[in-house]
Amino acid sequence: MRDLGQRNLVLISSEGLVERTVAISHFISGWVEVNPESPDSINGEFEMDVRTLDSGSELKNMQIREQLLSAQEFPIAKVSCNSETGKDKTKLSDGKPFSVKVNCDFKIKNTSKSIPVSIKLTYFKENEETRQRLTGNLLKLSASWDLDLASFGISIPAKSSALFAKSVQVSADLVGTDRLPNNALSLPEGIKKK
Image 1 (tube, rainbow, N blue to C red):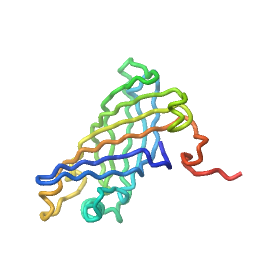
Image 2 (image 1 turned 90 degrees about the vertical axis):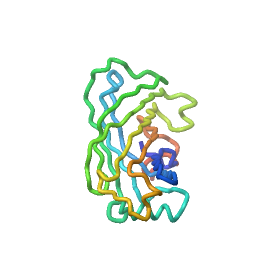
Image 3 (image 1 turned 90 degrees about the horizontal axis):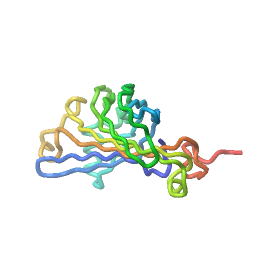
């Protein structure tokens, strides 16, 4: 689930007392392993470069990246999921969404914590439409969760307390393929040398 076309994304929304802030990053990559016969068994690892979060305002970018996330010292946020429940007997089928809630381990600013994450998986067999995104069979992963900033050692300065909420909503949308695409723009490692 790495896309040099930067179409995968993470969106963070903070509804402060007097202001809403939305920041987005397309620099997220990782992998997910799902058994189509038991899709509630999910394994995966993802990472995002927090230095790439963009709110559309340079001043807010500086506040988010440096004051809140200490991005120069802790540039990468990581998440891993290892859910082996296998209790749901639903199978992944072409174009049909499957939703599950799993606990994922997050590491932000060198602090680790487990958080429940709502995940929706949609599998697509390769066809003309899906090849507009990537070649191969595709898996779309949409996830959402709430993040309590203080639990990761993120404190909001007093002068910004009306602008940033203590808890933020995070969502992620990623698409991955089961084989490397033949479009050089989308190749994770770029154009292969002959």
